[in-house]
Amino acid sequence: MRMPDVLQKKRDGHALSAREIKDVIAAYMKGEIPDYQMSALLMAIYFRGMNKEETVALTEALVCSGEVLDFSSLGPVADKHSTGGVGDKTTLVLLPLVAAAGVVVPKMSGRGLAHTGGTIDKLSCIPGFRTDLRPEEFRRQAKEIGLAITGQTPKLAPADGKLYALRDVTATVDSIPLIASSVMSKKIASGAGSIVLDVKAGSGAFMQDLDSARRLARTMVEIGTGLGRKVTAVISDMEQPLGHAVGNHLEVMEAIEILQGRGPADVTRLCLALGAEMLLLAGMAGGRQEAEEKLERLLASGRALEKFRLFVAAQGGDPGIVEHPEKLGTPLLKAALYAWQEGYISRVDARQVGVASLLLGAGRQKKEDEIDLTAGIKLYKKTGDFVAKGELLAEMYAAKRERIAAAEKTLKAAYAFSSSPAETPALLKGLITAENL
Ligand code: URA
Image 1: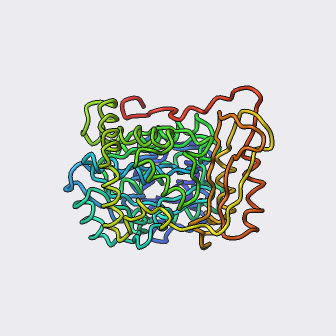
Image 2: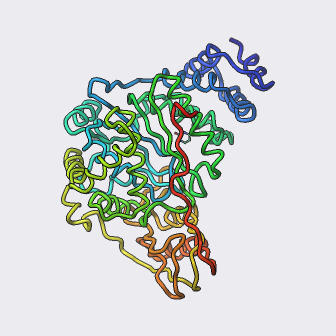
Image 3: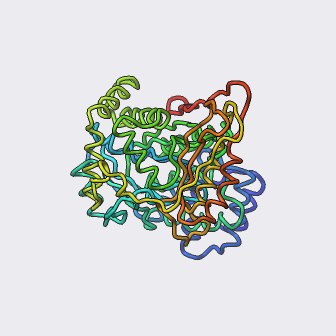
C-alpha cells in the first residue's frame, strides 16, 4: 500500500478496500504514516464519506489496535451509549434498573465534553465513590451484582484516541462515518454482546437535526450488526434538557428521585424505552410492552433503587446519599431567574442551558479544568408550561458570584415565550433496529 495512492483514491470518491483501511490504521499506529497524510485522508473521508463496508472495516481496524474485553461468560451482557446531551442522567437510572432485571452491565463511561455532561463526573459527587476500578475489580463486581461503571481506559481502541485528537484539530470531527466508527470501536472493544444507543437530536446534541441523527444511528447499527453485535438505536429529543436538573450533584439527586418513582416524566420515560430495548436484545423479554412493564415493576417495588445502593456501596461510595442527598454537596450560592413576561414557554434551548451550566462551573472550558460538582441549574419550567410574570423559571448554583453573572444572560437567552399554547417536542423520535435499517 502506498499512502499517496490511497489518498488519491479517496479524494476521487472511490471506496477503499478493507485491506487498505486496515493497513493504513496499522501503519499509522506504528508511526509509518505521518499526521499530515492521515489528516489528508480524514479530510477526504469528511468530503467523500464512506460506504457501509468501509465504515465496518475502519471500526474493526480501530478495535484491533488495542485490547478487546470479553464478558460473555457473565451471562446476557449489554451496554448503552448516549451521544451526549444536557441533563442526561439516564445511565445512573438505567443501569441499576436493567441489572435488577438480570442483565449484566459492565460499563465504561466518560467525563463531560463541551456543554454536555458525563457519567464519571456525576458519580464523582458521591462521597468515597471510585471511578477507577482495576480490570479484575470491574469484572468481579459485574459478576457479583450485575453492574459496574469505570472510566474509559486508553487501552481500548487506542487508534481512535490518536485519530480523534487529529480530527479535533483538523476540522474533521463532525463526519458521520468517522463519529460512528469512533463510538462503535470503543463499544465493540468493551465486550458487550448487545448495545443500545441513545442518539440525541436537537440543539443540545452533536446532531442538531433529525435527519443527521437518523443517519448516524443507522450507520452505528450497521457497524455493530456487521461486527456480530446486536444493536438498536433510540433517537431521542435534545431540543430541551432532560428532566429538571442540569449539573453533576443535581443530576445524581434527580436520578435517585427517578429510582424512587418520583422523578420527572421525560427521563423516566426515556429510561423505560432504553431499558426495554436492552432487555429485548438480551433476550429477557418477549416484546416491548412486556419489557417496559417488567421495568416499571422493578421501579415501583424499590428493587432498582436497592440495586443502585448496592452499586454505590460496591464502588466505595456512601449509599446514605439516598436518604441524605445533601451528602452529595451543597452549593455556596444560589440565584433565581424569574419570568420577565407572561406566556407559554415555547423553547428551553438545551445548548444554551448546557453552556450556562458550564459557565457556572459544572463543566470544563479546557480539558484540564477542575469542575465544581455542586454547580448547575434547576429548571422549574419547561417547554409548554404557562408562566405568570415574576414566576420562578430556574435556579442557578455556583461557588462564585461572577459565575452567576456570566451564566445568567445565557440562561435567559435559552427561554422563549409565546402567547399561544406551545407544543412540547416529542421525546422519542425514532427507533432503528437491525431489522428496519
Ligand atoms: N464521541 C466519540 O467517541 N467519537 C466521536 O467521534 C464523537 C463523539
